Structures are given as C-alpha cells and as structure tokens.
Image (spheres, rainbow, N blue to C red):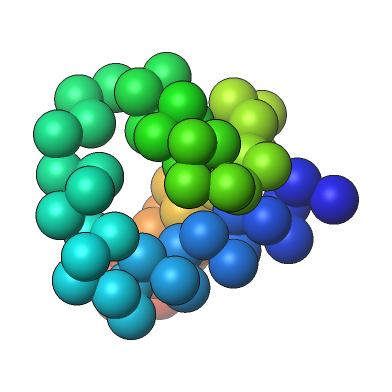
Length: 67
C-alpha cells in the first residue's frame, strides 16, 4: 500500500538528516515523489494529495477549537 509507504517515508525523513539533505532540493510534489521513488519508497501523487487534505482538515479543526 502506498499510503503506508508515505507514512514510512515521512518517519524516515524526519529521523534521518541525510535523507533531509537529499530531499532539500525538491521544489515540487513531482520532484518529491520522484526523489522518494529513487530512494525506494512507493509513494504516489494521490498519497501526497490525501496527506495535504488531511492536514488542511486538521488545521481547520484546530482553528475552530481555538475560537
């Protein structure tokens, strides 16, 4: 499943400064996906879109709760 791959990718990048440096040059979602695939992660554009949407929803819920 590519969603679990995205979760693993994020966890690995957060924990590994070398991976952070390797991805620092990415300027678009496409570049990030390609870099992730070159590093052996099976992530997709849909995974990134879903993660972004979930983040936006969580942010809206936090904003609502803060009011």
